[in-house]
Amino acid sequence: MRRQVDFLVEKRDGRREWLRATKLARSIRLALIAAEAADDWLATELAAAVIVGLRARGDTAAVQTAVVADAVGRVLIAAGHARAAAAYASVRSERSRRRAELGSAVALRCDLTADDALAAVGRRHLSSESDRAP
Image (cartoon, rainbow, N blue to C red; front, side, top):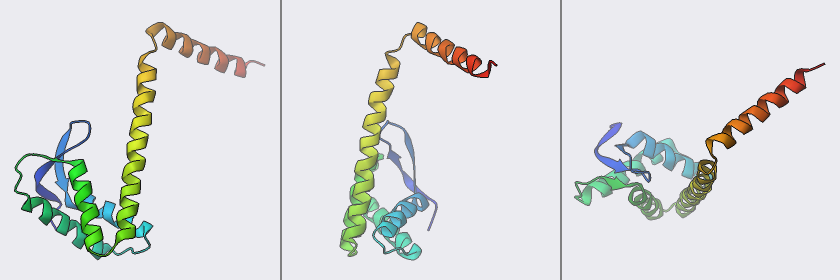
């Protein structure tokens, strides 16, 4: 299996990168492990099936990561690995939840002013010096 496929994937943040079959096979393998059906060759074959399915769409534009994830779920179910498909979907939803939490945390951090940041650094610096005092 080639490491890089001849089309791009558009990430959720807008970045584009080449679809890597090895990366896809690794994520499928992890879902199979979670479903207690781990098999390296099976993961590779399923990744190849996902890529064939994506190519059959005939779309020349970059493929969204959600489309790739949906294709993986469909291939896992079609191959009789519904538990692995559920595990794959579970990881996907957990990552979405974490991204949402991270986004809100970043928004909160952006509300800090430069003075707030300097004051916080100064407090940390002063408290670390007092910890070293005899």
